[in-house]
Length: 285
Image (cartoon, rainbow, N blue to C red; front, side, top):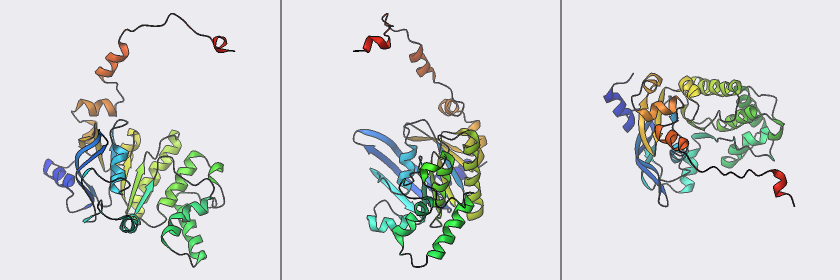
């Protein structure tokens, strides 16, 4: 486990901070979502972001690819500040990223082949379709779905759609992949397939990985490092062992799935129970 000095260096970016944010604050109107976050993401490692719903996890990773811009603070990719770039300049930077959205975000009107080549067509003119066909075959093979090129999303299971979306995310051979809740909505077996693919891509392609998840089993399996957000602030940062034994009660409540005393007290409060019970026939015309 890292000592305090190593953790401080990592938080500030360090020598291997391929992605860095400095004093990042994000507000939506009067609502404060992220407050003064400073963080460095190490090259070739998997960083998992955990925390309760609404704590700012997805907002955070969207800043890493500048799908959102900070209210204050700075975002860097490979030492270059990117949050202040124009959209045309950002398009060039984003070619180095892959993004797996929570629902996969496949285009229903396009088949698997067309979905995977979508980012290629956005950035390049295709002159040699044989090369593109080989590329799609290669990416689908990596996620175990070669042969599904002509299928449409409606004909795929939830797990297969996630895997096709992942094949699309690596179509441009990115240096960084951002995953937003990759196992949400999947049964434990399909979820573990996604976990294995996350590990495979990092191992075989050396990709820097950032994963947002509520799934602690997944987090412990894939993470080199786990950070936890709570109410817009970073409250824990370390490897799986450090997080399991973290002294902060908020961390323990989250990783063990426990209701806080405050919430439990609210649930147990006595209240007025209506004595009138309505039946469906009472609403019939």
